Image (cartoon, rainbow, N blue to C red; front, side, top):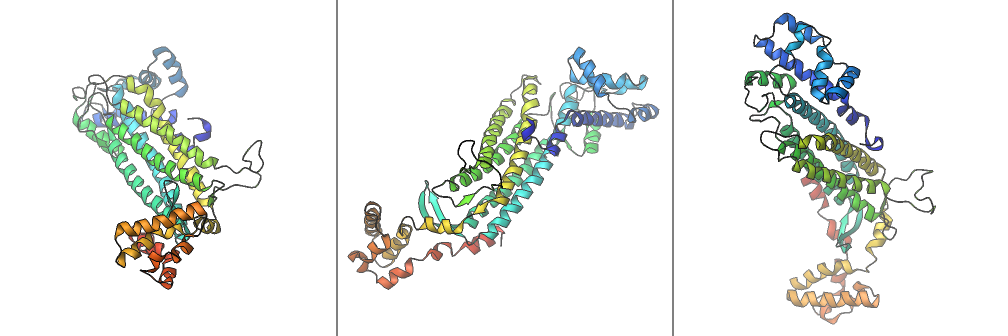
Amino acid sequence: MIERYARPRMKRVWSDESKYDKWLLIELAVCEAWTEAGVIPPEDMAKLRGTSYDGERLAEILRVTKHDMTAFLGSITEQLGPEGRWLHLGLTTSDVWDTATSLQLAEAADALDDEIARCIDVLGSRAREHKDTLMMGRTHGVHAEPITFGLKLALWWDEMRRNRRRLSHARDEIAVGKISGPVGTHATVPPSVEARVCERLGIAAAPVSNQVVQRDRHASFVSTLAVIASSLEKFATEIRGLQRTEIREVEEPFSEGQTGSSSMPHKRNPELSERVCGLARLIRGHSITALDNMALWGERDISHSSAERLILPDACMALDYSLDLFTGVLAGMRVYPNRMKQNMELTRGLLFSQRLMLALIERGMSREDAYKVMQVNAARTWDEDSDFRELVRSDSTVLSHMKNVELDDLFDYGYYVRFVDDIFERAGLS
């Protein structure tokens, strides 16, 4: 991931230092298990506990061996005496690599969970703030009926809570280790060693494996990140739409001295939300690659490895960055209630068409006839630039079923949002 989109905590998770530290942790945990099993003498284990890898020497060996694990092991064993022979006893590279990757992904999930929790908190706060802020609800991009801006935010809040549960499930699935030897048969390392190692590491042991932890777990994890990123894109797309000049009901934070265009000084572009949308496309693409990585030859090939070196850290870093960015947009977002009210009046009362239709039905008119009466008046409103309410008040068919005073009672915005409190209470936002 480029530096611009890599935040410190997630960078540390995916650093080479973090990876090799986890490799060493696993190698020593295996040695401890072999010691408990009576294979490694306690005095040798005492010497192994104080060992470490040499990063510079590792890089030198890697240029010769072109194999990460042999270079890693070589940088350790050349510092040791005979006790060095116990490292990697009975293991294959994937025992260490895949188990370490699971630890990294679990650690990344914890960092992402913290960011999701922060986003949920801000969404909840702003939803309560604007629970009663009337605005126009739109379907197909066209005015439908009134909602509140708080209700829109409550919808996002609830979706992010689902995303948090999805991430928790994906973390549970990926937090597994595999210490079962070259093809998963435990021929060179018994299940008891695997069980002890995974218990030390705080993860589960994969019940069945071949040479690798199965990639459906990784595909599920990255796909979950893609779902979360797509939710952020959905929210960001709405903010972009509501910031359009013709609508201008909300606006991204725009600081003093900030510029929106190199050529047009007046511009305030929703570039933060656009960035969230762009990174969501990247993460979705990584989910496809993760799914492709599931199909490996036999007990394992290496076609997944090169892709995972890119997609796993990049997907985690991109989502971590997007969550932080979008939470900042939410926290600093400007909301314009007066503009929302102005926009509600743009269609001159058309939004009341369904309520009037239902009132006519309640007073004995057939649904088809009531719909036709409202549609005719709606068409005149569009075509003649008239006020729908005034047209209805002078419609003889409507007046034969209702009085003007009854019509006045129907032209009430509050009718449409009278259950918002109930919705907030049901969602747990009250």
